[in-house]
Length: 303
Ligand SMILES: NC(=O)c1ccc[n+]([C@@H]2O[C@H](COP(=O)([O-])OP(=O)(O)OC[C@H]3O[C@@H](n4cnc5c(N)ncnc54)[C@H](OP(=O)(O)O)[C@@H]3O)[C@@H](O)[C@H]2O)c1
Image (cartoon, rainbow, N blue to C red; front, side, top):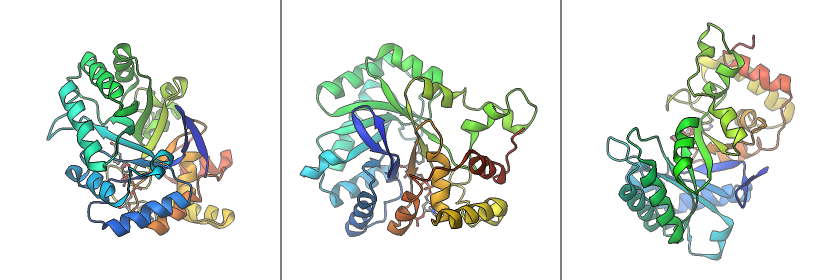
């Protein structure tokens, strides 16, 4: 497992995402988390809204976050999505974070992310909420998810806290963060700038990108592994998997971890065997050609 420097943490570059553990028993969650830890994962991602809080609650019931082992785990959660709208008010952020603490049964959250940008954001309120949570010892660090460079700068204008993470959707088949910079100033679909250059902004400002949905086609559209729609990509994944003596999943993970921005991959699988397969990808260093061939096999051009 490769580790990256993230604030004062040595964080695994693979994260176990906990969005899909709603129907898992405590025993199943324990097995999943133990497997992840045995593979070197020390980072766990949550959100208050995952199944209306049930995922955090299940995790808190299954894993003793009051134990000595807590210090070895980096627990991240998110807030700011309310029922049908976004809410970055001071009141909502504090209420959401304290709710997460209760459900997870922990004394502190390592990193709290603002989940999706609130169009009615009042950054002074966010700053006040962050100050309160920090002073109380409830949250150690802050970050965002799905935020543009200007949205990050606006928040940082008012808060003393450095925003250390931006969690964004990225996979070989959903590579919008990369596409437009490759095809700058061209007429094709790839050249459409959908993200305001957020990848380079994050690199310039030491903000760690966490790639969510590393196996999904589009927005929860099913996985591309073994999908006939992506037969060329799957053939190449299989060839590289054979060459590196790992699974196709590991190669798909390595396509993200190979990027020099030191990104983290947020896995969503609830299957311990798949966690193991994916972790094999952390330390594989694809060549430039292999990385580019995978990008092209997913249907993109390199002009
Ligand atoms: N910040 C945001 O806005 C945002 C949005 C979405 C998600 N997230 C975070 O990102 C994490 C990952 O998202 P995700 O669950 O969509 O990611 P994912 O890893 O792309 O998808 C995992 C899902 O695909 C299934 N799957 C089927 N075949 C698979 C294969 N061969 N390899 C891997 N998975 C396979 C898994 O089922 P099994 O469980 O049966 O393996 C699971 O249901 C979430 O847990 C959450 O923490 C953040």
